Image 1 (spheres, rainbow, N blue to C red):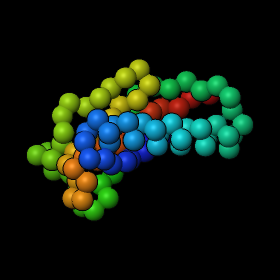
Image 2: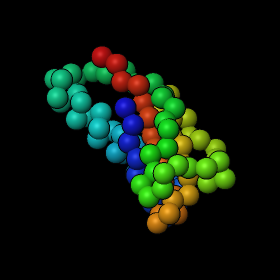
Image 3: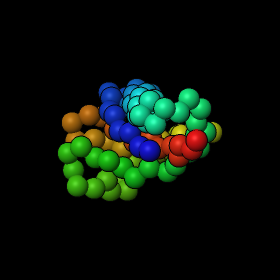
Image 4: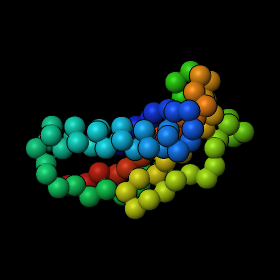
Amino acid sequence: MFATDDGPFKSFAVQASLTALKNEIEGVKAKWRVSQVTLSPAQPKPNPYWRGEVTPDLYQKPDIITSTAHTTCWRGVVSPSVCTSGAKVCW
């Protein structure tokens, strides 16, 4: 499962994409009537809003990897920072 969001700074965009991912996960839990899930990081592919691809020079390293999500960020066309977060969701 993946979610993308943006922001004026990388830290803001990371938090926004993680919040969007959490909202997606909550939606799946509600749809399938599941209360408990196990999350693990899943490396996301960028989901750019305004360009066809993200070239290597646009990435804002390092990626943020936690026990539950993997987030990668890049410089956007309109936003200074865009991030996609990914998680594998199991129940």
